[in-house]
Length: 396
Image (cartoon, rainbow, N blue to C red; front, side, top):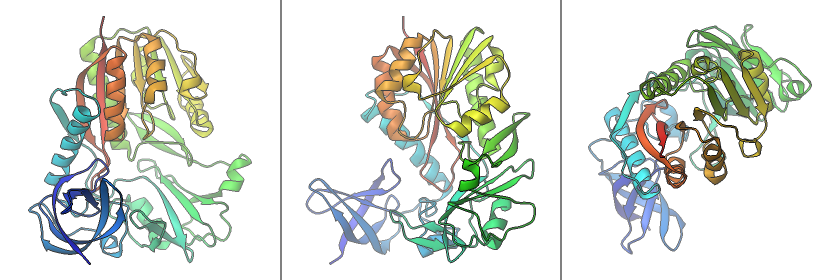
């Protein structure tokens, strides 16, 4: 039997939050603040439940028709297409503020907002499943695949591959393009046998890459050409990468941080080491991924010392500045301890999860750092994902 619920808030993970008659919180995918819904419960716990929408009885004022037809099919790739743009912005700012207050136990300064790429056609990397040889994305909170021929957030150079590519018996494929260089790459998992793709697309199987086959594209950002392998992390678009660099450089300039030593933790292909790192006499980059480390070695100058190991296993050295861009799980206690041991007066933290930001904020505060500035960079329109740049100052 369905249950009526009114959505009052949006959670860190992007779901709407309401209350059941028994007082439990219920999380509902695809809901908007103000929605009055009829839902079926899909998961029940002692303190909360999850549900799916059966019917929208009365829509909230910020609900809209999703611009992508795949949402109606159940695609879970973009979880906020049903929210208008103003509502998405307000929700991201609110979620970040709530995370800092509830998880970080700090009252944040005014949170800035910086628009990212265009609302559509911005993603230059996608990993998709395969159904009958064709590209597919997964339903929300499911491994079930939905075949697609278009994707509103995919760059046109990727959309062409989604629409016209045939991937034979591969289980998954990674599609990566250089939007400013024209490079296009498809990596098949586990192999790329029998693929049919446009002639300009480089095709390689994971089995071939393990044996040394070239599996990278070149992209241009901040006036630099970057080598980016299929298995290496890079931002969702070169425009997004430039915005990250700009926010970081602006805060460091205002703080007058010196020019001796910079440490770049979770350095990836070297985005920060190769840009703001040029201000410093010595740069140490730490990255655990083998493919990203190889890319960084290609991308960076001789003044950068590159260490391929987990951040927690690196022996900290004294630094003027630490820039940390950890994975979705955040710095955690071990990463914060590494930063503390550098004794860096200034730290820039790039967070891609609001919950992780809140937890890291509490740890950084306990380690003697104070939050000075924070900005939400909207690099993933149509989704609940956030990219947050925060500047921290070590207290004497």
